[in-house]
Amino acid sequence: MSKVRVWTSTKQRAKLIGLSLVFLGGLGCKLLAPANELDAIKARGELRVLTRNNATCYFEAPHGPAGFEYELTRAFADHLGLKLTFVVTDNFQDMIPELLEGKADLIAAGFTATESRRQRVAFGPGYLEVQQQVVGRRGGPSPETVADLIGEALWVNAGTAYEEKLSELTEQYPELAWMPISGYETEEILEMVWQGIIPLTIADSNIVDVNRRYYPQLVIHFALEEGQQLAWAVHPQHTNLLQAVDEWFTRPETTALVHRLRQSYYGHLEVFDYVDLVKYHRRIRHRLPRYRSYFEIAAKKHGLDWRLVAAQAYQESHWNPTARSFTGVRGMMMLTQATAEALGVKSRLDPRQSISGGVRYLAELHDRLGDEIHEPDRTYMALAAYNVGWGHLNDARTLADRMGKDSDTWQDVRTTLPFLRQKKIYRTLPHGYARGTEPVRYVDRIRTYYHILIQATERTPERAKHLTESLRASWWEGKNKPM
Image (cartoon, rainbow, N blue to C red; front, side):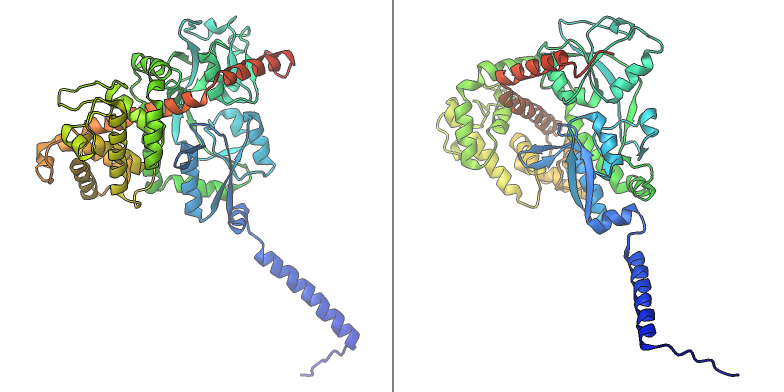
């Protein structure tokens, strides 16, 4: 067999080597390039999430970023080993276009998986069922059916599922009309209903539940439909990211997390006491100003939020410095005689001394729990210990460990505290019987009072005037026209 040897000139060889390098370089780039959108996200090292800045999605809490969607997407980003970046948008109708333009990887914004949206984006599994509710104010219009809405002034958040539902209903009720509002959160629109600026609106039940604490005069008239699922939305072509979302939601750890978040953000809202909340709002205006400086001074001294300790004091005594309970505790912060003496409080009926002593005691419990318990769980447990006692709180945490729960999270400890009433259980614990349901209710009510107080102290007459003037401007400038 003969061998054929091909000779080339130096110039030709250099040209061939160059072409080979180009080819290999191109091949290398293809090998290094992400194979799909999920690989591209991982290569970027960042998960970009479209959301909204409100109480149900994402907000800055005293202990840092918070919100149902924030915590859920943070857990997903951690699972993927990615940094979480939020892209906050003001208008619902901008969300899908921004997602499709590549400004974010997914939408996590209390987004309902409606049929019309499914034609534009892909949805992950549903994680929370909500209803669209028609909401008004006590003393205002009282519609009971969709037909009753005809002729009423109904204002809704533009570009939302509320508008989609109303559009569907016009097939059956052609005279149904409404005014879409752009540039506002649904929470702001509910505030405008509460203030009497607008008479009726539509909002998801979870948003209504949260905001009725702030605006107790809000009334739920009826639901427009049985229920819809909130879900994350992704680009319809991003099948790998969607698969990752689907798989993550099927994990037992994610199921447990969703349950915990439901309890954390909505569990304490189950009991709505209209009379109590109306009284509380009235006392914020008329009774709290007498003692506010005492709360501010004591809280600042111990590194606590004055509104938290004021909310606790309201739960204890309704801001009554001479309050007394059947167990013998007295004063604004309901201190026992022994605790008062240990804290150097000479008169439990002196509001300044009582507040100073009670805040110091709460701070000591908070410090005693240690940094290994993260916020807000640490604060909730400190409040529970203030109510039921340090020993009983530790018994509940011990019981959580026995049951395979996390003794460093309030959501798990709150489930074990009620067991302290059961003889077969409390007899196995160092501190015995306790009315374990009481600290759970205690913390829930303080959380409600605290969030109301935050809203109340941030709300000003200038804000109400701004909302009114902005709404009028949007009407007269023709930015939003009735359907």
